[in-house]
Length: 232
Image (cartoon, rainbow, N blue to C red; front, side):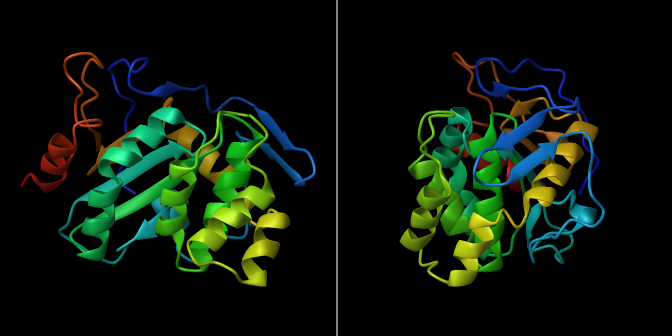
């Protein structure tokens, strides 16, 4: 993953602010998930599309060279992340499919236990080669933050909706198989000073946030985002 620097711009109006890197204990009752976000695990089980070299992110087109590298830091419970996905998700899927960019997704978990469960389930979907479909389904059906809706049963149902019906997937979700990986992503976010979601880097540089009023920057203007990716 390209070296990342903290943005000097504000983010209240166009991102969900967070504090990451301090000790934050997240417990998902009944799911067996407990993570401290300032401590990573070198022995964590990793999804098949993940490597430490890419900041533990779910990586597409990792072997490509001389293409834009896009790092997307997000939280599945974040409403502003849902907005970013609704505007740019299809374009991101297109450049992945056409192999014109390397894209790395970093699912964070600062909002609460349901973020942890969703990130774990996304990793399980990645093992089924269905990460993008699952990613889109979570945002399309995003409930209110910490509402208790995003249960394992709910996430398994979203998986079924995009064609993931294996017992392996269900077990992966129900046992929180990748909970330590979720911790590692959070820890890496802290090391990279990610303090709001979504945060998107192209070739190591954060895209323009704008002012959230008249200037929507490159986050929430689809044409501007595409231009940022494609600029030479």
